[in-house]
Amino acid sequence: MKFFIASDHAGFELKSRVIEMLHQMGHEVEDLGPQDSNRVDYPDFANLLCENVLKNDKNFGILICGSGIGMSIAANRHKGIRAALCHEPYSAALSRAHNDANVLCLGARVVGDGLVEWILKSFCDGVFEGGRHSARVEKL
Image (cartoon, rainbow, N blue to C red):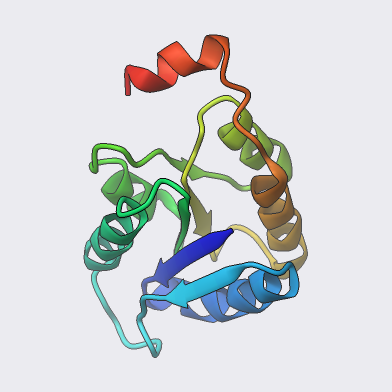
């Protein structure tokens, strides 16, 4: 899978660890910034990531801020983006299976490294089930 990843200043440290985890899982990752922990505005990075994800329907994104809420709100403003804020693996798996999520949002102040690894694995292993879920996703 190809992932674009971005954060704000609060998510910067976790972003670095998530990149390492994704590489260890064998995924391609493109870091869209920021490149340090100086204060930035999360909508700028959410918008940049969404533009890149929308270029190819095989692309995925990961957005990280303090709570994950701001990034998920900003991302879901883009037609074609289905961003899911997940704090545990079960919702990450369902976001792929039932909602065909293409962006995973994480809260750096909410989840730790161990939990993030399981969330990533659940999201990456997830496959959209289609069927009854397809008509609902099309309404988004």
